[in-house]
Image (cartoon, rainbow, N blue to C red):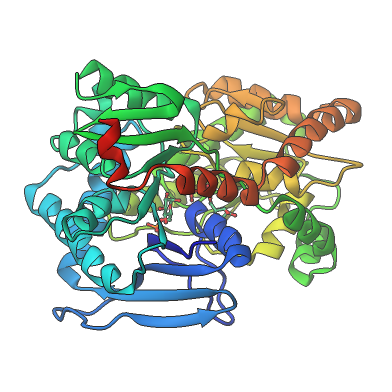
Length: 468
Ligand code: ADP
Ligand code: G6P
C-alpha cells in the first residue's frame, strides 16, 4: 500500500488535557488516518512573527506523523484570515455579500501555497499518494507540479461548491478552477456540488465532461466525484452509551429532569444559521406557551476565527440575542436558552446529544455537517430523539428521514420543533433506524476508502497525455 500524505491547513495535533478543535475536517481525518496511518502535514496554528521558520516540526502519535510548519503574521493575515476566510469561505457558502476581495490577500494565498509546496516536496517519495484538503490549499497541486512532482494528488473540498453565477462573482475564479484542474481526483461532498462544478465549467466553455466521472479542463484530464464525508458511527454510538456515567453528562441530565432538551452544536459561524435558529425557538415558545418552563435549549458554540470581523460581529450578536430572549421569556426558575461558547470533549458531547430529544441542525449552507450525523449516532435506540435538519446541509442528501426544514422559514422551523417534541415513539424509532442503518454502512472509513481507491486508480501524471 502506498504511503498516504494528507495536507490540510488545520491539523489537530493531540494535546493532553485539551479538547480537540471543533471542525469537521479535523474530526473526520483524525478518525480516517488513525487506522490507515501516514503523514499529516499542515499549519501548526502558530505564528512565527516576522520570521519565516526554516524547519518542519514532526510529532509522532500512533500511526500518524504530524509535520507542522508555523506561518508568519503576514501569512496568517493574508492567506488564512484574508483570502481563505473572507473570500473563499463566504463565496463558497453563497455569501458574496460578505466577501472582501483584495489583491494583497489573493497574492498571500498563492504565496503560502507555494511555501507549503516547498516544505512538502522534500518529504515525498515517488510512490506516495498525496491527499490535499479543503479551500485553503486549492493551488497546492499546481505548485507541486511546477516543482516536477508527478505523484498522484487528490483534492477534497469540505465546503459547498456554489453554482456558476456565485462562483464567478469571485474575481480570481479562473485561477481557482485552474488550480483544481491540476489534481488527479477532485472530490466534493454531494452530487449537487459536483453538478455545480461541472455545470459552471461547461457553461463557461472551460471544461468538458468525459466518461466515468473524468473531466477535461485547462489541458488536463482528471476524475471528479461526490464522496460524502462521515463519522465513526459505531464508535460514536458507543461513546454516547457510555457517557451516562460521565460526571458532566450526569449533571446535565439532573438539570433537565422534567424538561425536554433541544440541542444545537456548531462552530460559531454565520453559515450555521444560529441567529435564525434562536428566532425560530423563540417563536416556538411564544406559539406554544405550554412549553414555557418545560423545555431547555442548549446551544454549544465554540468561538471560531475570531480575528475575522464578520465572526467577531456574530459573537456579539449571538450573546446579545440569547441574553434578550432569556430576559424576555425567562422566569425565576427557567432559562429558555443555555448558551455555551466552549469546546466540549467528544465523549461528553456524545452524552449531551443523547440527552436531547431534538437535535437542531439548521445551517443556511453547509458542505456536509457532521453534527447531524453525530446526533443520530448518539441516540438511544429504544427512545431516540428527532433530528431537525436544514435542506441546505449536504447531510440532507443522505438523512432523508430527518424533519427537513428551510432555515430561512422561521415559522416552518418553529413548527418543526413543536412536531419533533410531540412525535410518537414509533415514528421516532422508524425515522432514526433508517438514518442509523445508513450511517453504520456509510461511515468515515468508507469515505476514506472510497476516495483512496479512486485516487490510486486514476492514471498518474504523464499517463494523462495519451488521453488528451
Ligand atoms: P464544521 O466543519 O463547519 O465546523 P461540522 O458539523 O461538519 O461543521 O463539524 C463540526 C465538528 O466539530 C463536529 O465533529 C462537532 O462534534 C465538533 N464540534 C462542534 N462544536 C463543538 C464543541 N463545542 N465542542 C467540541 N466539538 C465540537
Ligand atoms: C470547516 C472547514 C475546515 C476547518 C474547520 C474549522 O470544517 O471546512 O477546513 O478546519 O471548519 O475552521 P478553522 O478555521 O478553525 O480551521
